[in-house]
Length: 466
Ligand code: GLU
Ligand code: MG
Image 1: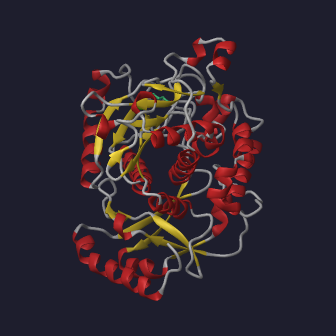
Image 2 (image 1 turned 90 degrees about the vertical axis):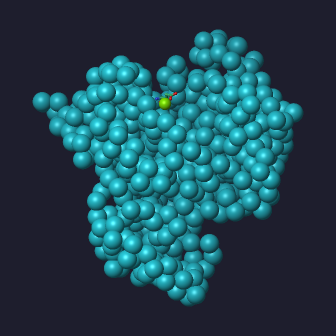
Image 3 (image 1 turned 180 degrees about the vertical axis):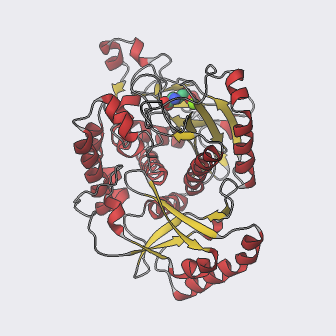
């Protein structure tokens, strides 16, 4: 994590060299080196296979200007981002090097961004997450997490009069067996590709909205979970393209209807024990487990600036759409921003977790996971306590009833979330001055970019970006 010493560079080169034959045998010609920018767009550089050892040792050059990119590729003049000068090095994490089953000839390895001096770039979201995982480990705590991925499949050419319009490629009903039959070959190829890439898929199903599907995967270490989120999405895009389909992960594909969520599942562990089960706190939480969930709940408005980072996110985040538009928690409550999941009796020690529902796939998964760890850990350290769990849709309560139950509506706009994030001292300390400022600057930039647009225009601008 610290300075990349010469011996580390040498070890990385040797490790990459040792993989070359196996990769060549698998038909690999080139390696994609992706990272996610502050806005939430995955950017990439690639190297031919023969250059992997040198990329492993020295990284691949990349401008830091991408910290200041917006979703339409315009660039802000941020306090610490957006300058055209300077250079960073993209260092592939070889432990995650994967042959891409959906893109023959390609391998993939997520990167950490370093300075030319060999120190982690202060605005590298993956390095931030690694640091936070290490700092929890110093307190004996481990987090396990997973991202659920929802997406829609569309006809590649839109509608006859509008190539960028959304025309769902499926017609069957929500959770419908007929919809599954329509995507049978596509889904088989997708599951096959994910398995070949070592992704531990838990479930696949047709979702609610037009053309919508979902994959969920097993919980992992937080960095691995964010890497997996990237890999799964990349695989969905690649396999969809092979099947002549266009995909959207946008929080709100059309202005009406239900959006795409990117729910995050989290559990907290110490000494092999799941702190979300078997405790004295509410619904079986241990006191530390309760502190972690309370930390999440207390900081949700600020957390949205990284978890629901697009203007379109707030078109999705409305009551009674299963998006979790209220700061509340509840047992299996799909209208609470934090849904507590215990799993079946007998399996709770391994299954209990919280699902943060108010977040979507415009999020940079490293930044979102980092924010969850930071605020959760703050709740543990402060011994924070939870209000009573909520068992109904908060939208069905009156304002007074919600106030009495301590239920707050979440920010209704990206601008409000950005201001909450700006004022959040826990997240400011965890992210560091530069990255904290850049998140705020990029969010304000996207607000300014889209403020004149109608909801339908915002959906259109955002639809095919993530
Ligand atoms: N599509 C919903 C969302 O926007 C979530 C549906 C579900 O609960 O899985 O988050
Ligand atoms: Mg779902």
